Image (cartoon, rainbow, N blue to C red; front, side, top):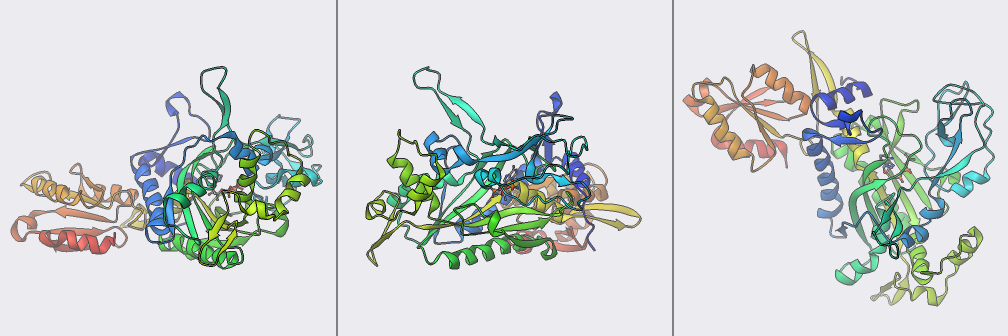
Length: 492
Ligand code: ATP
């Protein structure tokens, strides 16, 4: 049975083996910011590659995009982020620390509920919050909070040096809006026809009130988002399709089924524009709730394209922040509205509509953490503890390590030749230092699926041993067959 990893085990392995380091550590560190080390960057790149492969490469109906992080401020006005992307917070009068109201626990409650997403701040403000029994997570004081207040989550920065044309811009809090803003560009420059999707992977920034659990919630993170555009009326079918596809992606990459489930959003938890939303949750070994969001899949209706349609029209004249006015405008279905640049003309059926959008939105760092946790194992081997990461080959930072058994008798030269031959195929590692057993253990901890060792027999019959990380079984393979053997085993 695999051992359940504790977060401390993961953090220390990540530091020890060069997966993840605290940012600016030599200066004492910068809270909630992390750097990916030599193994970590390979893992993260592999997570992104696997997402891109299944979402873009293997499909005929999805294209990719890579948008800038800084965008026109109108994008955030139209999307609703400028006015609504905020968390409700309260300050502890005893220790002055601020907490997200939806993350606060009542005294004597068994679990905190961290399920509320950054949804609608107006709805949260309109709700009565009983703070009398809430416990401060920083100092433990009970019922000592101020009245809840909104806290904006977008980072801002100044763009340009000249007084005349410099402006305040935001670091994007999600990648999705870059996709909506390029909807027309993609339509005009490619042959896509609805239903189709646009995918993007990139950095997002949120000035989170509280960060937590290593790379689980940070202020700078990477997202993988797909906006799948479809005809209204077909949206529910596509929502089901993407739910299934995204769930299976995690399973196909080795996440254990018992650690993954769906959690449907309650109707009162849904963002006002969303018709349905489900989270893919993973059973993380931290926090009181255990099950925590890995990815959200939402039916966003035609909200975003409509909002941008309105944004384009009212450029330089955006004055409607009143909620009712926005709602009234949103439900208008005038002919004129459909002539806007973000509508779609179905030339086969001769009809025009604003597409509905299904959005699977995943966190790359959060997925990487889930893959690390799920792959982590410890086992007793001949009286010693063996730590290993049972990564799926597609995710393993190093696919094959090549060793000479000892550093003499021509073994290093042969091993080098094999290494040079294999490294063009997959990420390989050469190591000739120390006892071979220790070298195997180091690769186990890095999650390397196979180790190839050149030994005394190699010179006689041209065979090497191939050691399997999970079973530790060793097979003799002729060097002329090695490429094919490893290719088949790794299935890359
Ligand atoms: P939460 O409620 O956890 O703050 P959310 O529901 O607001 O998150 P989304 O806006 O749906 O998150 O973002 C999609 C995905 O992006 C999340 O499922 C998560 O994997 C990732 N993500 C969001 N915020 C962060 C963060 N601060 N750090 C790391 N990953 C994040």
